[in-house]
Image (cartoon, rainbow over all chains, first blue to last red; front, side, top):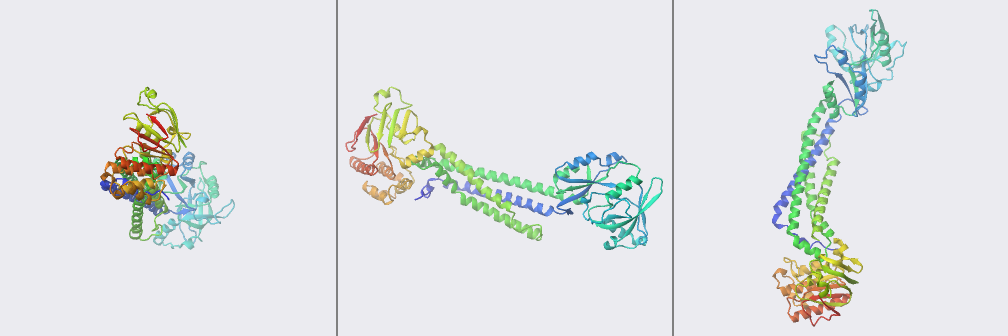
Length: 398
Length: 213
C-alpha cells in the first residue's frame, strides 16, 4: 500500500495566515494574466503589422535616398551613394540585397508619339531585374534592337491621366498603356539627338521611376554621357522586414531618407511593441513578487510546523517524499490560478479580435500556442521552485 | 544483523569515562535476537547512546556500525529507511504529535511500513489499557497514557532492534509488566534484539547481557 499524505496534511499548520496565501494566489493570477495578455498582444501586433508593404517572395523592397539639407545642397559627393555606402548597407544582417537605381547622365526626352502628342524632358533609370515586381520576359534589350522595353510606375500613369485632359491629350487605361509605343530621345553632348522606339511592357507599383534594361542604360550612358563614373542617388533595398527596428534605426543614424508610408507601420509597431514589452516586464515582476510572497508563506508554514515535520523525519518519513508531497499540495491551486489567467486572456483576445478588430483575418480568436507554452512553463516553474525550497528546508531539519 | 560500537564516546564527555564505563570507549557487538540491558544513573548518557544508535545525533568520537555500514556516512534518506525498516525506539520524552489523536499518532507510524493491520492498533491499546483513549488528542492524555502510546507506536513497524530509553518512567509496575510482555512478544515475532536503557535493573526484562554505562 502506498504511503498516504492524508494523515500528514493536518500536521502542516496553515490556518492562521490564510490571507497571505490568498493574496499571493491573487498576485500570481494578476501577474500571469498581465504576462499572457502582453505576449498575445505582442503576437497580435506582429500579425497585424507584419505584412503590409508590397512584397516579393516574402521580402520588402524599399528605396532610400540621402537626405538633402541646405548644407549638402549642390554637393553631389554628399548626396549620392558611393560604392562604400552600398557595401556597408549590404553587410547589415537585416539587408538581403542592395541595388542602385542608376539614372541617365545625358539629356533625355520622352515622347508619346503620334497617339499621345506630348514631349517632355524626362529621366530613365535601371535596376537589377530581381528588384522589379512586375518583370515580363520581354524586358530585354541587346545592342542593335530597335525597340527598348520600358517599365513605368503606375503612379506616373495616374499623374498623366490627371493632367492629360487639360492639355487636350487622351486619358489612357492600364491595358492601353502597356501597348503604347513611345519615343526615347537621347541627346549627345553637342545637342544632336538619336531616337529609339520604346514600348511599355509593364507597370510597377513598387518602383517609382521609368525603368529600362540595365544594359541599355549602360550602353546609352557610355554613348551619350559625359562622365564615366556611376553613382546612384537612390538605392533599392531588399529586406525581410522594412519595419525591423534595427533597420529603421540604422537608416535614421545614417540620415537616409525612406518612403515614410512603407515604414510608418514599423514606427507604430515599435511604439506598440515597446508598450507591450513594458507591460510584459511588469507582468514578469508581478509574477516574481507573487512567487516570493508565496515562498515566504511556505517558509512561515514550515517554520510553524517545524516540530511536527521534525518528528515525522525522526519517525522515518523520507525528506524527499515529504518535500514532494508538500510541494504537490499546491499543484491544483497553481493550475487553477494559471487556467483562470489563460481563460481571461482568451476572453480578452476574443473581445479584441471581435470588437476592436472586427474579426480581421490576420488575427485569430484562439490564443497563440506560445501563450499556452508560457502558462505551462509558469506552473512548472512555481512547482519546481517550491519543491526545491521545501526540500532545502526539510534537509536542514534532518 | 548487528550493531557495533567501536570506541564510542560522546564528544562532550571527559576521557576518564572510558575507564569507568562498560560501554563508552569499548568494542561491542549486539546481535539480532539479544536482549541487552544497560543500567546507568542519571547523566551517564543513556539518552545519548540511544540517540546515537537511532542516528539522531552524531556528537561522538569512534564509530557506530549497523551491519557494516557506518552511521556517520548515512544520508538523510538512508536514515529514513533505517528508521522505517530496521530500528525502532521508545523515547524517554515520548515525542507524540500533541494535536493528533492517539489513533492518528499510531497510524502515522503504522502506515510508514505496515507490519500490522490497522485493527492491531485497537488490540494493543486495549491490552495496555488505553483503548478508550484512541480518539483523544494525545496532549490531553496523562504521561502514563502517552508512554503507552509511544510503546505501541514503536511496535507497529518491522525492526531488527528495539531501543528503549527509560520506557516505564511514568508507569506503575503492573502496567510496565503488561507493556514489557507486549514488547517481548513483538520482538520475538521479528526475532529482533532489544536494547533497554534504564536507571535500575528491572526484574521482568529477561536480559541476555547486562552493561553498566
